[in-house]
Image (tube, chains in turn yellow, brown):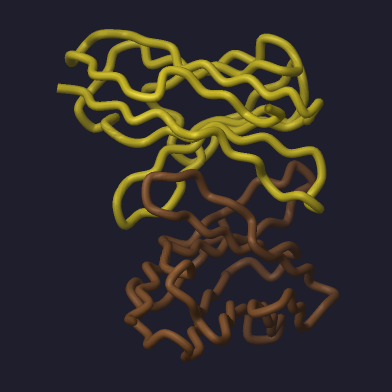
Length: 112
Length: 112
């Protein structure tokens, strides 16, 4: 199925552990985004990549790094997880606004 | 930077009645205003959007209005149905990279 694929869907980490969230899209979209969603706070942008080879910080980049591996893939890395990073993470992609963002199914991350 | 405020945080309406959700934005340069619907445990999905050169847009039972002078835009849902129950997010954007600033969301409850 065409769309945005995120892995894993669920993850529990201990404080200080590292992990990488994977995102891939097969729609030939140029721009890709990583958001986190916390209760009552809507969606907050962590990092985005306007095109292959570029990445930029969003509203809440601290504690995260990203890699735009190629046009399809955009990964998010937590180097040393903290309880404050417990959240639901969404990857999204877009080429033009006619279709809006296409979101992945999300990753529910718990840091204990 | 841009700030988007959304009200109310929770809205409960009787099935068949209308629902209105309002958002205000701070940056007069914003020119694209989408609305997303997120059902419980699912990803956000675009339901309607409007650009700054248009005052109103309709799609069946949903409509969006934009008042650029007052810097606010609203989502109107008529003849509400149980499947309209969800969290609705407004957003605003001005850049060519389609970076969105999101409202905090409105939980819409449709009472039978």
